[in-house]
Amino acid sequence: MQKIILILLIFISMLTSAYTKPDVYVIDATKNAYTHNNMGLRYMDERCYYAAIQEFKIAISLNPNTQATSVYYKNLGDAYMAINYPNLAKQPYEDAIKQYSLNFQYYQALAKCYKALGLISSKIKEYNNDSNILNKVMLGLLYIENGNTKRGIIVLDEFASSEPDLLITPAVKFYIKNTVKKMNAL
Image (cartoon, rainbow, N blue to C red; front, side):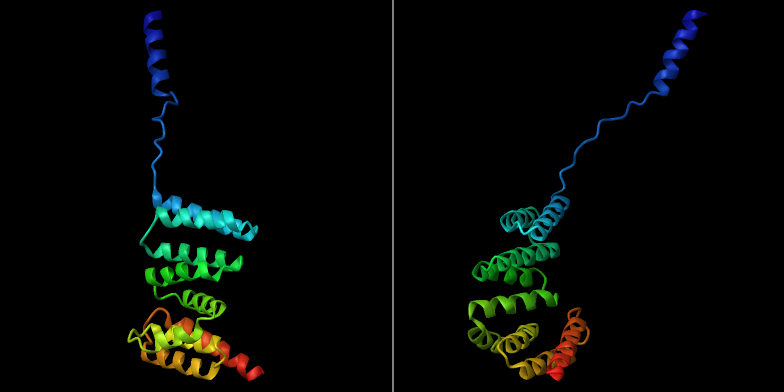
């Protein structure tokens, strides 16, 4: 009888034990890139720019050639601009636009970078001769950064009316509206 009770106790303890399979850590580069980007943003808030730059570079290397990578490139460019290195910010901003060309903020950041580098006149010539319709966005912003606001608004408005269905168009229209308001307030 004692043997049966002992066997039943052992059997019941095995059924109700808390044994689970050990967790297996899965390396997910995309998730890790996202985490490094967020760490970089946290460092940017704390004004630890060197650490932020390193985190953004890690995020880019973990998850290259995706739409999310364009965000990492833009954040890297923002970090360089924050420490007044527009020459280092230029390439990440251009890479952000290459990765995802329908984000208006990328164009705005690149236009400000070109202005800081004194490249606006040469870039206006370059973008004026290009047949890519999205380069009209950059051209309009360059005119505005150069002080020729009316011409920039005209170029951006022509883009918005010729490409009403693109994802970038509502942001361009909103920017035009705000720029016109600022012009009229002066």
